[in-house]
Length: 193
Image (cartoon, rainbow, N blue to C red; front, side):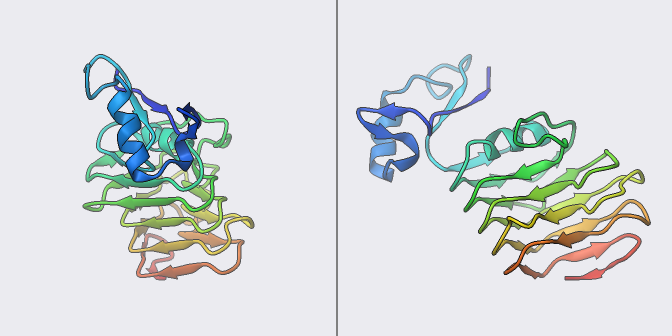
């Protein structure tokens, strides 16, 4: 009940879900019976534009795992809890696919309570992370946002990043071509980026 199901990898009348045009998506969705028709079923996602308004960090990771080109909006609220994903083996929220936008609406809070890994790891190229309050714990020993070497041309903007310990960085950049602007860094190191 309420589970998101990745319909982007299936073929509908010879059309791959992730390659469908908006008109094809509308036609496909008109033929699918899911949560829109029966509240006891899951939601089959074909459209790359998804809004998340409930659940914790796991709900966000579940949609990130749908792959390239996802455009995800996270509604206002606080999102925490553990993350289990083959794409996020360290337990961090992981943007592993290319051309993904993860956008906060109303400055939702992502609460990271673990210690030895980053809160958000960006691995995919051309990824965007914007509009969030990212909070670390006092046990945090890694950066709250890590742009891995493969995260070329990433954009990190309009976030408030609060580290919880003296040994954590707000944003750690290992990639090239990153645009980092309009963020507020709070905690031990403070500042803006």
